[in-house]
Image (cartoon, rainbow, N blue to C red; front, side):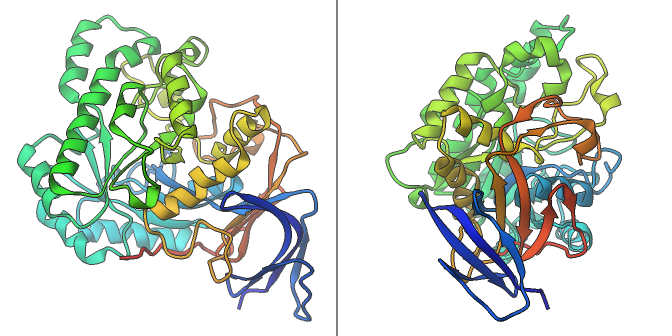
Length: 444
């Protein structure tokens, strides 16, 4: 039985409001939210005066590399990094080795997470050109699996899906949310020939350019509209793609949604000069005007969710020359702090950050009883100290790969504690992995 937790005098940030309150947590859930809560029970009492208490971040796109790529990361190692950064729940992608393209392989990942993940978890079912029957079996598991993932027109291992019959069948017959990586492989191949002498990462946004992103995203949107499919396009990175989305009605009524990643809001192509392949990722970080367009769309609700696409590689792998170095960067430990940095700058409100990183993922994926500070909901929450700075350094990076493109960056706020399903998973610099997170469940 979990010991109750009483949080006193916190500044709650939830559903567009701020107010001071106490919170009582019992049996893993939020028992009561009120001022002046008193109890005779033996509680863990936390004085949160002067600190923000927010719902736990839900990251809808991470790559934790297990099985098969565990020299880069494991579910356990990256879940520890996640909770240290205020992310209490994650949804992980299928492009592992072997990829999660059968029901058996998918459930093996769930079993591994149950043993090793201090954060709550879910895993996408992967689509290949030849596994339609396996994918459609996921229709019977809507309450247990976050969605299916299609690498639509962009090659990632053997998971490139470029067969129109496969795509049309999946879009027409699935009852699940489809999450897509959208880059057009034909355009990318032509650009690789055009820039055959490319010798540094500054060429990356020229090869994986705006046209490649738009054409693939446009195709996905057309298929979704044709079949009334629930579509979620990942990591929007270009100004042109924004015309495919709307803010004319609320998120709960949208059939086509999207995500923007913290690195596309933070870096631009100008940063390749200093960081090179460390910020090489797919889709590419692009010219500054794209970043500005993404920020505008985030603030006016054409962009729905903020996530990471956390994709670690070893330092040695990333030190290879452009063309050999793999794409992807580790971010899940620092995504919330990156956005809180922009809160301090005045570019976005903390209420909007919570909306896009906590509420919106829960609503978009129909997650049961998480993503909000509500009585009866699971107690996933983060205590933030707005007056204590945090500097990213080798000594406090928890990614198995051991590096971050943000090293040396000082953030104006810090994560004091992270509570996962009523358990203190992180406190004052230390992860407590004596209790594992829970499998996310979804509403029909």
